[in-house]
Amino acid sequence: MSELTPEARARRVKVLLYDVDGVLTNGDITIIPPLDGNPEGRATEIKSFSAHDGMGIGIARLAGLKIGFVTKRQSQVVAIRARDLKIDHVYQGQSNKVDALNRIMAAEACTLDEIAYVGDDIIDLPVMRVVGLAIATANARPQAKAAAHYITPNSGGNGAGRDAIDFILTARGILDQTIERYLDPTSAEAKSADIGSGNM
Image 1: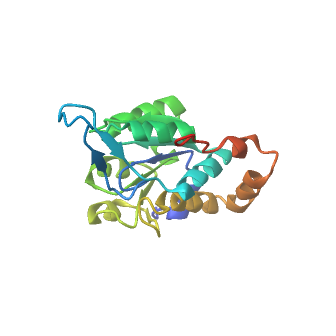
Image 2 (image 1 turned 90 degrees about the vertical axis):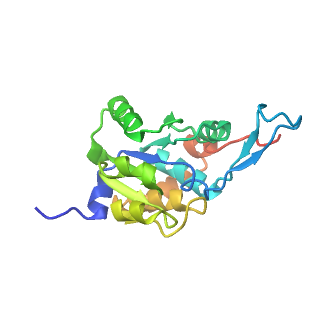
């Protein structure tokens, strides 16, 4: 039996999962120490996300995809971004990402073949090796690229998340029509997508 093409794998996807650092961000982690100088105090962590990825996730949701974040770090910033994007599954503090994968599979009643995962480093390999569609970002480590069925044109934090969505929806032949549905002024999903309050 011949190996499935990446496009054939993409057509089966129902759930799209992302690592965060280096995939939905450029991998930089900026930490601002507590203002009182107490090293045991609460530091502030800063990450930057791509607006293109945010809009892409809104389009993916409109197309019926379920979206998840699976990341090793614990970050309030990620929790806020996940809330703004209405992410279906958020698993932080995951040193063994397969545990989260199994819980998501059970919750969605789906198979490994119906899951895509976007990663960039070796911690992502156990998931990338078993899902139906493994995607590596352009900035991924060589090991992650070797495990991938598809590599995004753009790097993490610069549209790689959107690249994954465009690839899947293009393979399904519904990208353009889903974009037009998103642009429909009567679309409730589009109106509610990626609304964050920022510093307001």
